Length: 237
Ligand SMILES: O=C(O)c1cc(C(=O)O)c2c(n1)C(=O)C(=O)c1cc(C(=O)O)[nH]c1-2
Image 1 (tube, helix red, strand yellow):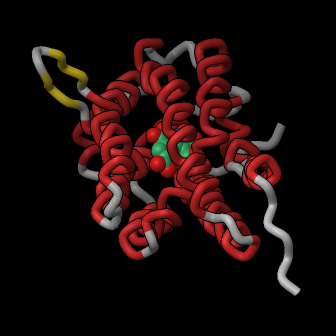
Image 2: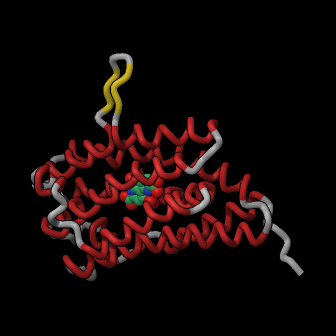
């Protein structure tokens, strides 16, 4: 007998419950956001996370390249502009990658040492590349679903905004702009990603597959933190 599909509310609830394995709970992130990280650990995190930042718009271009639905692409293209920036009708937005470089400057890293990726740990690179490769090869609806870790991202950005200024007075506050901008962008992304996921994964087997895909992405973020914990160390409370 095949299992009954969850209705939309139950399915969304199942997806949201996966937040229990979000990297917000990883010891390395807990250390960072409770003010126990050294400047070297913060710099290591910023320099390594840059590799994720530059991979995201490439991943989003991969999603679009596999998607035959123009209405979805019209919404999705905004994600590339969010990260790469744009100049249109006299309006300039330098974008998220540039904002991340501003963060790097604020924590005392040079643009050069971040952009040349000298600090990027091999295991972290493999984890991020797995995400991009998944988006290139998977059906586009699965790639959309894999972005749903963003359900949990506003909370982690808000945590940084709440705790970093207090604990890390040595970080120039303007550098935190990236986190502020992502709170609303992530909510908008999730609205679109969730609509596609709830519409597409309708049988119970498909819904179980969606949960597997989301877990795969959660594992990528977790593995990135494992790599940084191994290289930079973790201090326990
Ligand atoms: O700082 C974080 O912990 C965090 C996590 C995630 C995420 O959950 O994948 C994203 C971001 N930040 C982020 O800034 C971002 O632009 C982003 C895009 C995506 C995606 O999968 O398309 N995830 C995330």
